[in-house]
Length: 249
Ligand code: NAP
Image 1: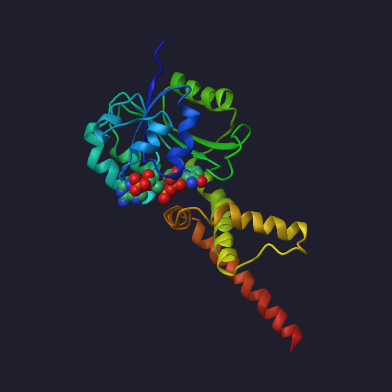
Image 2: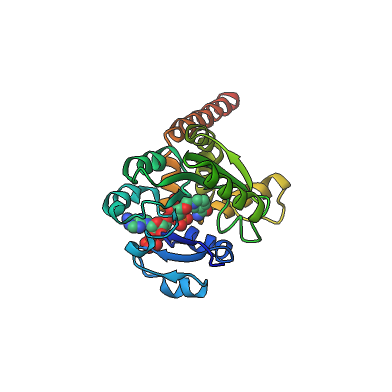
């Protein structure tokens, strides 16, 4: 039996990372703004035009969130009206609103957020968390996709609304990525006398500070709840500093 067709739109760090998990189960195609034909061929992925990519049965949007609106607005006329469209963006309210706004009403829409990436998933993805937001999807398709994620890829699927997702992620990612970037900027080094707690801090820095700047900006600026978490955090840092200075004067 022929495998179903699936396209990855946006073949950057995450698009390339997910390809080997999908090629055993789908005929995978990819398109990106830059030319990644050689990388695609190495991963047994068919490099194609965006018009061709948008004709596949399953379409996975994996571009930076800031490009979502332009992408959907420019190319929605080429989308297979029967396609199931998923995104993998690290925030959920904005891309889902945009998919609902621009995709044909006949397309099924599922928001997802894999809570792992090229670093945290480099030794395998079984057992890792994946957020699943059913937006406009028939029960049969929802069952197939959930079963693929949970049974085939062995992910721990967490069904959430886009708002639940973004509220929690403001802490889980907004705060963590913010701290990781700051640690990177102050040169927190791998000292021989390290404690376990310090080792964890270095792990946070090493896992996250190498993500693309665009991804960092999306996690912080496209999540409507992240700014409040950051400003609460910074206010508490200032309060602690004030307390320390008061005690020592
Ligand atoms: P990213 O910097 O967020 O996105 C890179 C991708 O977006 C590339 O395919 C890039 O295309 C495309 N892109 C960016 N700006 C564009 C523009 N103006 N026009 C056209 N294409 C543009 O890095 P990423 O890590 O690959 O993330 C991709 C998606 O996966 C994002 O939605 C992110 O939130 C999500 N995600 C990432 C991770 C992770 O750990 N990396 C984990 C979970 C989910 P070109 O490379 O062709 O220029």
